[in-house]
Figure 1 (tube, helix red, strand yellow):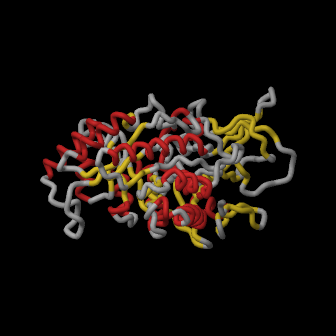
Figure 2 (cartoon, helix red, strand yellow):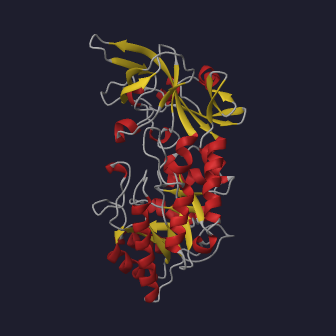
Figure 3 (cartoon, one colour):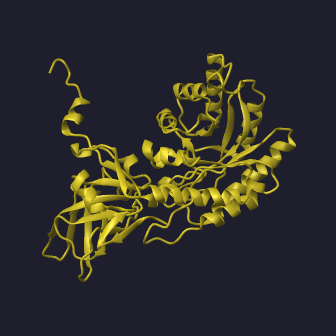
Amino acid sequence: MHHFVLKNGGLHAEGVSLEVLAEQVGTPTYVYSTATLTRHYGLLRDAVAQHRHALGDALIAFAVKANSNISVLATLARLGCGADTVSEGEIRRALKAGVPADRIIFSGVGKTDAELAFALDQGVRQINVESGVELDRLIAVVERMGLKQRGPADRAVGPPEVAIRVNPKVGAGGHAKITTGGEGDKFGVPVEQALALYARAAASPHVTPVGLACHIGSQITDLAPLEAAFRTLRDMTLTLRAQGLSVTRLDLGGGLGVPYHGQADTASIADYVAMCARVLDGLDVEAAFEPGRLLAANAGVLLSRVIQVNERADGRRFLVLDAAMNDLMRPALYDAFHEVVPVRPRDGEALPYDIVGPVCETGDTFARDRMLAPLKAGDLVAFTGAGAYGAVMSSEYNSRPLVAEVLVDGDRWAVIRDRPTYEDMWAREPKADWL
């Protein structure tokens, strides 16, 4: 389900040679495929449309935290995709990319008053409230603003629409650090408290509760925990309606995993959506989906060049790349797996390599004892499945220039984030006037 293929002996992104990109843009560089983004969004959109009877006029809102590049967001926005955001900056990026405010969801456990005010002023579709304290602060912000309308003059008048994010005590995900629905996790409100909070919101003239939300983790490869969480939302919906309260939306979050090479395959998009429809059938609600990794992971690779191969007397072989943990944090942070493939494979018996970067941390290790065809200094390699949670987590640690990004569309390509020069980096750090 991606468009990175070998042509004429070298790896291409759609119709563009990665060797050409390395020569003209340099390395390390993220390269994204428009065709893959389009295909993945289309698969999810079409699956959702087949179950409209159960899912209503569902919103697909890309999780901006997975890949916040404005050109990537604009690519999805042109297809009709909304945005799931967790900060004012992400809301601004989504708006800049052309996502309408009424297709933006604002989530997050620590929204500031300023961020809430900005979201209200823009008239976002929905604010997902994650605690009683946050509901109180949101009401206070609405009161201070003297809210007369949800946004610009052509937008609907009335209090902001909110959903209560539920912690269903169902934690799942590819790593403990990306599990978000467990009892001890910081996200959401326990079920009984969430029911009371929904009723409290309904009694306020300053907000309009419209639904429930949950997100239990990321890189989930089994549908069972997702179904358990969604059934909790279904039961809560029936309970709230029995109390005379209106529930018209269920935000199912994201989390469905992708088949990173070397890991077990995950459930298909079709099976996932069919399960959601089965759980929500008969509720007469609008569903929301917040995919991030699902759309973007396999739409991107990280292109890197071999600096040298260090061989020790004990036989250990280090493949030293110009990409480092500051360019791709996932292996250091989550022990995440990324397949590493040569851009121009050569014949020869596979050898075990420890794949490392130049940063002064032992944690700057992408893989141990990875079997690869012979490689030498100057060769290009690509980390696959790197389109999500790659560039967004990058930094300038060790004073390394921020990684560049490129978007490919057929035979054309564009740099969509420049690699800063050292002068650019220094310009952001004015020296104290007494030095």
